[in-house]
Amino acid sequence: MELVKVSNYEEMSKKASEILFDVIKENEKPVIGLATGSTPEGTYKELIQKLNGSDVDQNNITTFNLDEYVGLDKDHEQSYSYYMHENFFNHVSIPAENVHLLNGKAEDAESEVTAYEEAIDEAGLDVQLLGIGRNGHIAFNEPGTSFESLTHVVDLTPETIEDNSRFFDNLGDVPSKAFTMGLKSIMKAKKVVILIYGENKKEALQALLSGEVTEENPASVLNNHNDVTIIADAAAIGE
Ligand code: F6R
Image (cartoon, rainbow, N blue to C red; front, top):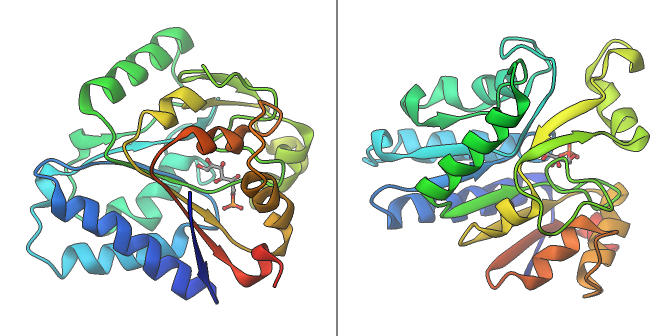
């Protein structure tokens, strides 16, 4: 794992967008895995500028998102679909049919997750962008998730529900389940970029860097991947 130290949010966002943009330029039909949350918002701003200021044919780009709340419609303001359109897709010209988002309202959860994983396998992820939870979760894979997990439905932990409640009016409005790519799905990506920003992610970063690989720390599976870039700021590093 390579650790890139940055001094602030802007630098992290620039660095992450550069890596994504390089993958896009290097591949004829780039397939990029995307994340939501507060951490990558700046990355999307930068990437929008890079894409729109270049002659890259955006028709060739395919995307997959990590996760989605179960029960939220794609137009719900707190859905990850809404987030992705607000922060990225509405500002670029990637064709809608190339955008893969889990459907929070899917009636048949089993077919939803199976079809999603098959689509990932068919396309092949060139790069996966990740954030991390305080408890080491990546996507919605909470501690204890099998490293063999593929796209599946999860029960969110009280800690994650509380962390995510800042976006909802009430704690009770936060969905208790989510669709998520599994740890094995994430590991299928050729390259992984994980953003770790802020003091409250310090322990998660330390645990990742400790090299201990355990299902109690979902992100630790990344120690088994041969191309991971961690971009972390001084506060997360503890400097
Ligand atoms: C979001 C996701 C989550 C977040 C994590 C950190 O798609 O997969 O694992 O990356 O919860 O969220 P923020 O960036 O809001 O701290």
